[in-house]
Length: 245
Image (cartoon, rainbow, N blue to C red; front, side, top):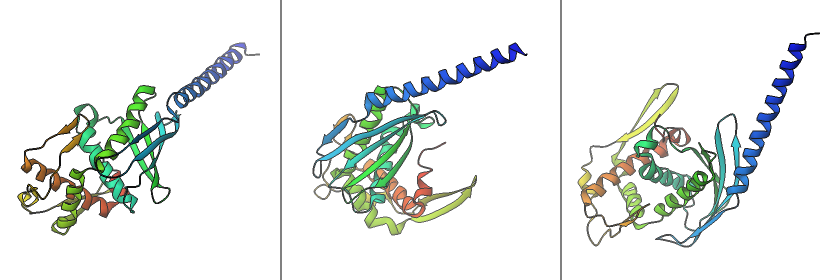
């Protein structure tokens, strides 16, 4: 009888059981620490919005923690895809331009699911098992949603509605995937907000910041129209490119 083989098999079994127990404990710890948390807030424009972290589970294969955030938003547009387009734009602007996250984002994936006229859920994949970091990710959803319901964002949307036909869509098949982008010869100065027509402050994660440089705002409007035009054309395929490799 090969005793060494039996001992090796026993050790392997113990390692597997230990690993499974460790993963199970991690999942339970994550769920107990953050699931069920709620956030309610009234945005700059609109009525109170409610968010709840409904589920939270660690996936050993993906090495990601998947969170389900349910949202009740009486201010949301009828088209959930429009809200998704807007939220992804602001998430990128607020968080993804940071050097620390541009190549290795904290939130790896966001999937929007329709539940009703006011209700939807966002399935979020986070590269962390740290409860405070998961809490931070949950709060990011709140901050980005709040940004969508501001006078500033309404200005961006109005620029899209006015100038979308001025942008030419381009598609490129690369690395087995279709890439969507938009460009225009439009003079960005046409998007400069004029006092009295577009009065707003830019809300950021650091608070309200008065924006005096209207030229810079017109550049942001141009970027948003580019984003929205490409998103409307590419839909889900476009959003796979939201986070740069």
